[in-house]
Every structure is written in structure tokens, then in C-alpha cells.
Length: 122
Image (cartoon, rainbow, N blue to C red; front, side, top):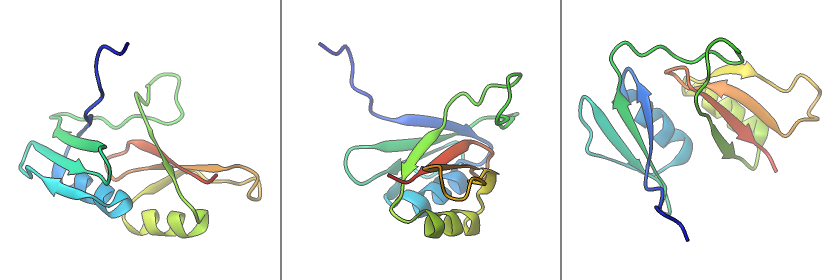
């Protein structure tokens, strides 16, 4: 029997509102409790992401054995080329694109605050 139920994943960042708006454009959903230090993004279904101001935030390095990425999000997409174009237009930065001629089913990006995330194609 489970001890608890996951209710929210919280992401540290320098600007919670800006990062929440980035992910809202990528994932949809509704922003609530918008403020200087904390923003909730309620996603379709029961999932929720929250963004918390972290003074002195240092983005993770990817890939790096010295500095852990700590966590990353895997985001399933139906059209990899379109999804890549759209996240880049929103301010994502490519970290590891598929240079194998489309053989891989994922691509790695950094969000505007530097957190790695993957676009995954089934």
C-alpha cells in the first residue's frame, strides 16, 4: 500500500512566472497563485507543476558528472519536428538533438532557466 500520493513537482528557478509561462505554452494548463516567489501550473488531468524562486539559482549542467542535473521532464510528442520548432521558438535551448538521422526517439533541451527536458516520440 502506498504511503503517499504525489501532488506536485516543484522546480527551483530564478523567475517562477516566466518559467511557468514557458511550460504553460508547452503543456497547456492554467496558472494560479501567480506571484513573485511561487507559481502553480495546473495541467490537464491531475498533474501539477510549481515553480519556486531560488535566490542564487545555478542551472544544472547536462551532461556532467561534476554537476548533477537533479531531475528532468520527459514530454511525449506526436510530431518531433514540430515540437522541436515550437519549444525553440519559446526559448528552449538544444542540448542533444538527434544527430543520428532520426534513429533516436528523444531529443534533449534546456528550458529558459537551464533545466534539461526531453521531447519523446513514441
